Length: 431
View 1 (cartoon, rainbow, N blue to C red):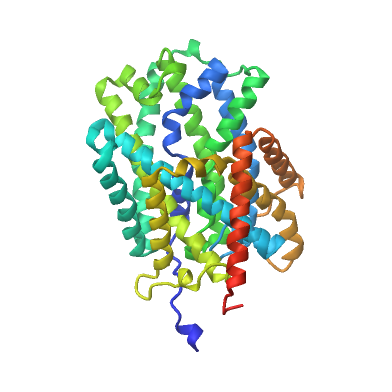
View 2: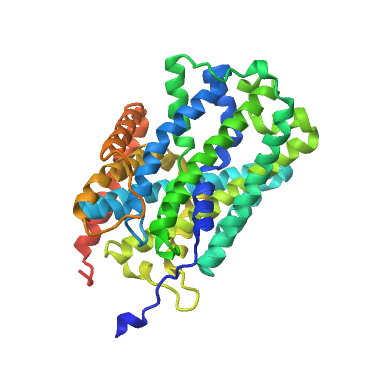
């Protein structure tokens, strides 16, 4: 009887909301600087690098689409790994995913205040920086404490707000592109193409955010695959178009520190530069809103399975939000963002992303065997072919990580083992 009166999360997020969470995760602040780096590596053939990376990343996205269509609980990669490999591997995958979200939120918070500094320099340092980070993190946390409907609506609004300036940039800029600077059908030198593809594969990451809050999605088994596949396709088109406009309108693109804002000034004048600079601010805020929505729900999933304190799995009876998890995640994010410790976490983000991506891809054929009675909302064609190719891609990318990243990744796993062992040793009355 008690279980029936326990507050539960509510299903209020539709297809548009899940798509917005995925888009918000992918289209972040990085795209405002990415065109210069890619052009420096691959020159006029840069669009080909974007297309190749999108095709490669689509393999991983497709694996997430099938895995996600088998579940309607909160957890994403943590849930998939737990079901396929067991409690400890599931916890470690979820832990690495959590560390990546924490690093992302803290780093984005600092990019947010740096961008604000363009308009108000006092907000970029000292007390102004403290105030800006505090207001951003706790303001978004307060919205999440009001419940998923408010949090999702905020993500939707900020997603539109960040995409509109980019679409204006593309539509207006296409009329001024110097086509002699674009080599659409050419391929870059293989070594440079590999470097650019590695960079861009990570630029297409973040879609996995939408896989976490499925317990609050209206029809996750059907909607999540659509949201993920639509996101990778839409972002690929957007990124290619942005690159074409940037390199076709901005001489000296490879050395520009603000490629999109500088390119916009070339064909829209000073207002164009201001528009894209303001868009960078909105983009960082939008990315923060999505991660502050997702991060607490990972804590909630851990706690519900008895792997973190039970309080983190509690749901507010009126707001239907995991309120203690929201407060805990916001508190840690706020502290890390203010102290600058996110730099150490950022070093393991590449390894962490590959770990939870690879395990999700490996989990797909295992889940097919273990969940024969589950009818997935989406099934990959070709049997094991796509998961195998996706795992091969992840291994290839892992082989390219630096020693620093590898060490940071190892430390991330060790920290997860310590937390897991400590919590088991202390004991959980629910076990």
